[in-house]
Image (tube, rainbow, N blue to C red; front, side, top):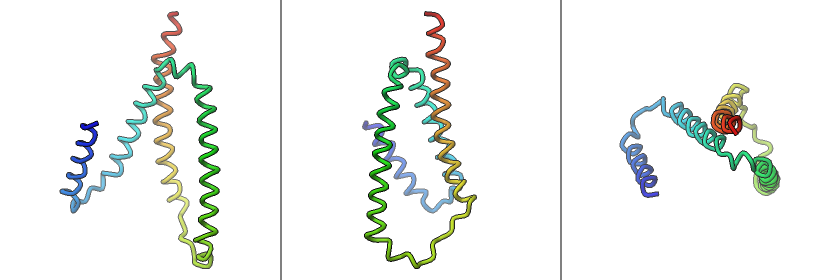
Length: 134
């Protein structure tokens, strides 16, 4: 835990020192690192036999939690809209181009596919061969 806090503090300090430096590569580097981390997380989870045996129950719980979170978020968004943002209806909204929306979705898909690829690879390489020898 201390090493994690020290790494965060070092990153903050480096960001402070380099705040005037233009680092155009940074968003791409962060995206690649996130994809790699999720790939290795998926690889670890896919190779764990106990998780493979409980995947059905875990999926049901995840679906229930996701549905509850979506429903609660929608309710709060509607309440917030009716309480605060409805008065801004006459103001012209900012138009997002389709390529701009696709760019955001493309990053999310890349992150999701990184995790799924790692989980599938972990399941195929580590769990499947052990079943073949049993």
